Amino acid sequence: MTHPAFRRIDHRPWPHPTSRWTWRQNWYDLLFAHWPVPAAALRHLVPAGLNIQEFGDTSYVGVVPFRMTGVMRRPFPDLPGISAFPELNVRLYVEHDGKPGVWFLSLDASNPLAVWAARRYFHLPYWRSHIQFVAADDRFRFHAERRGSPVRFSASYRPTSESFEGKPGTLEAFLVERYCLYAQSWRGDLYRCDVHHVPWPLQTAEAEVDAGDLLQSHGITCTGPPPLLHFSRGVEVVVWSLEKLAAK
Image (tube, rainbow, N blue to C red; front, side):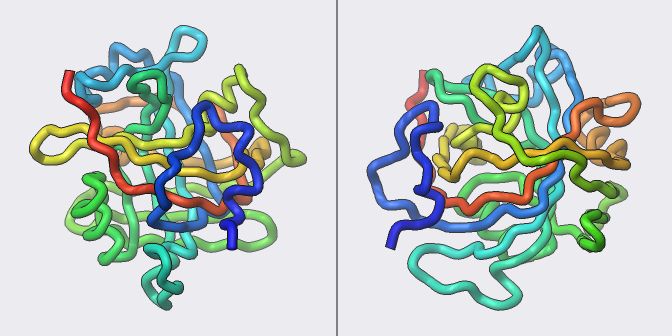
């Protein structure tokens, strides 16, 4: 049976891998909160092998709280207590060999097994956190406290428009329509991981966001509330194994 992620493939900036995908997961009820930050101020946070992308003469820092479901390696079924959990990430926008993707500064999750597996097999900077995620009356409340750390994050958000897709060439598409992530092992090797899903169903959003601790933990200071806010009901996703990038 074909995975629902393949209902659309025409929107991808490059063809999806022909090899067999290895993981599946769903990303639901997301807030995309973005601040413009000059690329030069972010350069030290990204490996030299990746280029920081800009839109309108600036790059962006994104903070994304959401909930994960259906997280499991193919072909196994979901497991209660393991396959669903809330997550929070801080992300930058990069590219390598013409393939735009995401560089994660940090990812927080409440599931200890997911944190271990993502660090071990995907070289991603996951942290274990206590997270509360509550949905009521079309409003979502998210609160995270990183274990053994003073880092805190909270947000209350809701959609405020009809659903739309980010069209190619728009800022919305630049920020969300990305079909790979980049990661670096402790040895310094760079990897790319392809993902696939249908185009993001976006809505404008209103939100109260307290991300000061989270951003400052990466040496980033963003004054004021995020000027760009989007909500998405979510997408169903397939994930391929890591591909090591050739050294230059």
